[in-house]
Length: 215
Image (cartoon, rainbow, N blue to C red; front, side, top):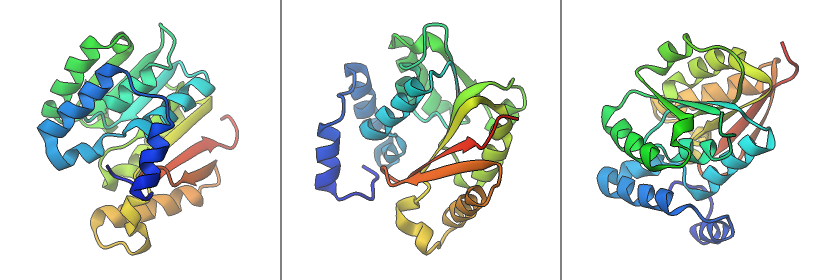
């Protein structure tokens, strides 16, 4: 589990969060078995429910996800979409997407999800505006590029949610390219006059961003 919160508090918070469907519990277990330590990239129950709640609260109809991994967060958000809603999720890893696609096929919300395999920045160029929620959780060195590419695609009520913005606390003393990229991204968003933002200490840090006014 990737979190800055003390383990006993994280366990308590998880126990007091709406339980996951059996299919997503199964997905979490298979992800751990197949990918070992990389399973930390999976959003997990509290963050997944936060994303689902945000999607429901804003009445999302279209969602864009940058970074699918094994599809946990995509399924959590898709559950909040109406039957004719759309979630586009982007990833470059065939191995990760093989598992994600299998579980999408078994999910009652899988029909709402479209997988776009390949570099996300290329995919973004092909998309029409009007996304109510964008979730960025991919390679950290491209965070600023993903942000700049997706901000114009937001609907007037839209939100961008960005994961791993505290990078296990290493934002305080960045010692790697990823850490430095996240610090630069965080500063860029904080100083962007086009938006308002709030950084939450959920799991590994998640920032919520909205435009100050519709374009």
